[in-house]
Length: 500
Image 1 (cartoon, rainbow, N blue to C red):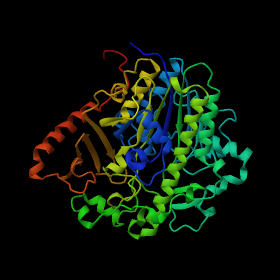
Image 2: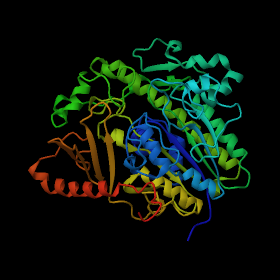
Image 3: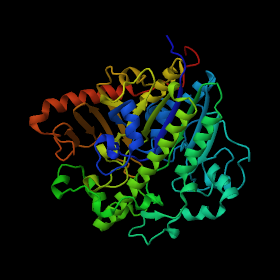
Image 4: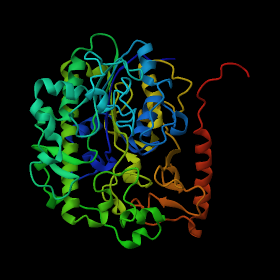
C-alpha cells in the first residue's frame, strides 16, 4: 500500500569519495553537518555507482535504469528525453519538482554545428541568446530548473545570467588566470571568486529560496553541486583551511602495479595522455611532484568543507521553516575520485573503490534510525524507485532497481551490485564489475585477464587474486554473480505497442 507522501531534499556532489567524510573515519576532512546528518539518520558504507562517469551515472539516477538501457554509455551522449524519469513521475503525482545546479543530462559542448535552443546545457546556446529570459523548465520531467554549467564556471546558465545582473565583475574570476596565488600545477589553485558568488553558494541560496516558497504541496528538490570535481580550486577562506603539509598522500609502489591490467600502467607512466577522466594535466601524472599532490588534496578538502557548510545551511533552513519532520534528506555523489590511489587521478576505466564507492547518508523521518549503518553493497540504480516510494506512488515499470527504504530502515539489502564501463578511448576495453560484501571481481571481455580483490583482507586493492588457485572457488562464485547481474541489467524500453 502506498505510503503518505513525503517531501524530499536530494543533495548530490560531483566526484566525491566515500571516505571524504569525518563520519567515515577521515581524520582530515571537516564535515560536521554531514556527520550530523549521519548521526540523525543512516550512513551506507558501501554505495556504488552504476557507471563511474558523470552523464551515465546521472542518467541512471534520473531514469532508474542501467546505462545499457538508457543508452548514455559515456560522457557526451545525450539522454533521450522520451525516457521516463522519476521527476515526471513525481510531478504527475502532485509533487512540485525542482533541479538546482548541475544537471549534465546533455553534452556541454558540440563538435561542430550551430547552437540549438533545446540544448540548454551548452554555453553557446546561452551566448547566442536562445534561452528565453523567463525559462526555468520543464526539463526532463522537473517543473523548475536553475542551471549551472560545467565546473567552476560562471559565464552562462542561470547562474551566469544572475551574476551578470548582480556581480558582473566576478564572472571572469573563476578562471586560473585570476588565481589568488601562482599555482604549482594547472589543476589545483586558490580560487579568486568571492564566496558569495561561488556556484556552491549560489546553489545553496537558490535551494533555500525554493524551500521558503514551497507552499503546502509536497515537493522534491534536487540540489546538485558541481564540486569537488577537478579542477581542484576552493574560494577564500576554504582555500586556506587545509595546510598542504598536513595532507596524507596515498603511497604505492611498482609492486602494486604488478597485478593490474596494462592500461593502468600506461596511464600512470604517461604513455596514454587522454582517457575518459582526462582533464588539464591528465598526461602529466609522471611529472606530478609531492607538492602538486599535496595542493590537490588541500584544495579538494576545502571544496568538500564548503559543500558541508552548504548542506548545513539547507538543514538549518528545513528546521527554521518547520519542514524537517516531513522531509527526507538524502546525500550522495555521482561517482568518486581516484585521488592518488594506485598513482591515478580523476576517473576513467579503473575499477577501484576510490572511484566506484560513494558517500551516502540519509535522514528519513519514520524510516531511518539515528546513528545506524546500512551494511552490504547498495547501488544508485535504486534511487528512482526509492523516490517513488517516498512520494507514495507506484514505481514506473521501466525502473530496474528497487526501493532502498527497507534497507535504510535496518532490513536486508542487496547481495551484489553491478558496475559497468565501456571505454571511448580504448575501443577494446570494457569493464564489468560485480561487488559483494567481501569480494570485487572485474571481467574484461575479450581479454585473458581480470581483477579479483578480497575487500575484507585487502581494502586497498593491492593484491589481484584473479587466477590465484587459493581463490579459485571465490572467483567462480563471483563470475556466476556477474553473469546474473549482467543478464538482469537488460531493460525493456521502449514498451511494445502490440503483440507483434
